[in-house]
Length: 177
Image (tube, rainbow, N blue to C red; front, side, top):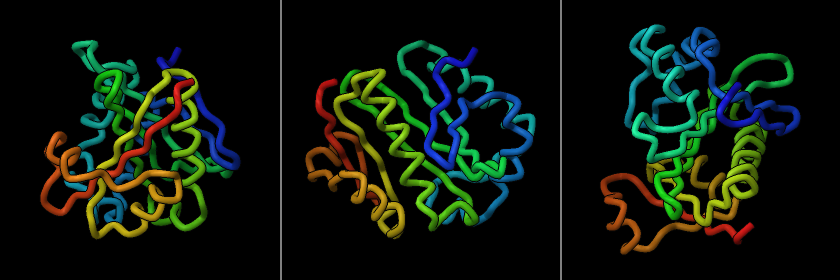
């Protein structure tokens, strides 16, 4: 039983991460366009990805001090096209992230998937504020965040979260559930 539920975002289904996703996602994460604006590389091996998914599927950090939500994004034709994730570090700090393959972009899939995740976080966990760090050159991602009601954070908040270099911090307050 997953630590968090599947989510519907028609025509997409967000599936809680499971070890069984590793093989299909390893191929998906081989898309070099994914890493254009990320500070990470593709998973080094399939076994590494299996191990990572096994940890993430538990829904919390090994210490139990963070909640981890990771969903694989599956199109209605059955193909995985990326993932959305959230990390609740504290009652006031919830980071979100999303990654879509080139074939998954430009069709509203990111908007639907992130919206479904945000709705779940608000409804089920009463998260008061969402944070997202984005490379300043990633115009597509910045446009998505703005479309979803995020605003660029002020300098004080950026300093508090040690955002520097080429990243920009976006924040979206949520009303209390």
